[in-house]
Length: 355
Image (cartoon, rainbow, N blue to C red; front, side, top):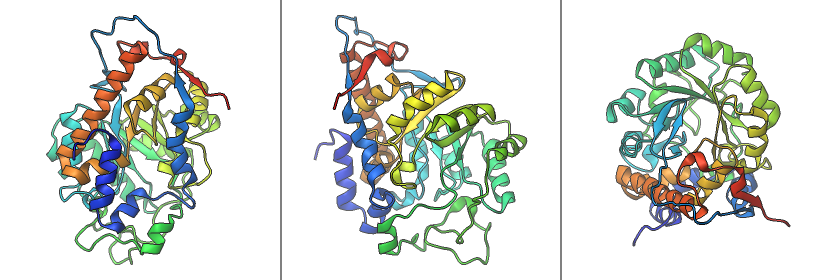
């Protein structure tokens, strides 16, 4: 079948992935209200397109903390890529590099940071960090990532405990025996590992804003905080020296009943006032969604589940296809809305439907 849009890849992944893997990737917390709202919220935003604007030459490039990417869509950190494709995160790194965009590698990768680096030397990568109770483990990860040339550190702030994902509980989800959380091998020897491949309660729920200073003492990498949904926390992120924020609700996998990320984006952008860069993940399914997010103040968006669907379809090639479709749709949406370059995208471009 011809893969025309991202939902084609979703249908393929649902059909061909083992049920336990599909359910893990698709899962939201509790009733999945926030997961679904992430997508539905875009339908309430309408364009105010401008005409006769000379869109004969289009420029989709932008910069993340000074590094140029080909278009404002990167790959969000998600775990366990080998559940989708045997080469796992190595394929993800290669696809991102081929499309000249940013890949945020997860702490919970099924390939090591070293393998990810070697798969796409010179690729633009950030490293996503969970802080564990064993702080030495987290410290070593940060220092390994910096030594390997990762260019940013993304601290996930919204996971002091794992949200209740009902299908994973029902399925008794566990990583298959041949898969490991490669970056954490040997870190928790002798401990009984739970469904996600780690000992129960290994994450540190006592993390606070002051731990940003601890991370700054370990690395020269810029710190981006992922999981911010309110103006209060956006303000605190700026005050504590973060250089970026990813407006994220963890794909609706943590607190069910929180806002859609595109709705939270407006509040965060207003609070930040351009002092640091603001990005978004959650619910991006079309190039026009990217345009809406940029119009509301995001510098770039990141895709999670669609990247996994691309891997499930054809590995590196499938993920490149997903990115190419988003790139083409984004460029077309820009042109039809009257924007020849990313710098012309602004709040004037969108309005919210009146209920």
